Image: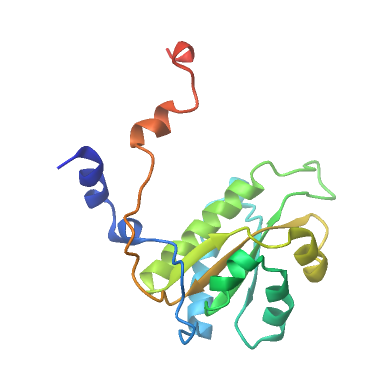
Length: 188
């Protein structure tokens, strides 16, 4: 057994089995309780200074907010994301007014932590989560009109996967995580 296969086999099943569905079952619903659990998982993510600089706009097919968001999807994401039972717009509180801190350099990182928690909770509930950025950022921001300091960052489609992934998941080798950003001459 090669080292990478052994490492994957040692991961927690939620991590080893997680994939981003390319298709969702349009009949798969995400009920109120599921939405609350997903947001609760996101809420408990770590953040710099416990600032929790994230927010989510959640909507399901048939809801007025959904009808406002879907037109801003790029055609490439609209083909599959609209079959998900839930669309989530992620926002980061990047600019902090009325304080000595004018910009949170950790906001996007902290939002990513929160999204990771939401994603793993979805996996634990038998749902799939597919994060994406294929939408008109300026138009969606104008549509949602977030409060000052808040920025729309990404979207997540959450729902019942139409099928299990039949594609093998590939990743860069673990050694690249330690070595890729540096030239060999820079290493000690």
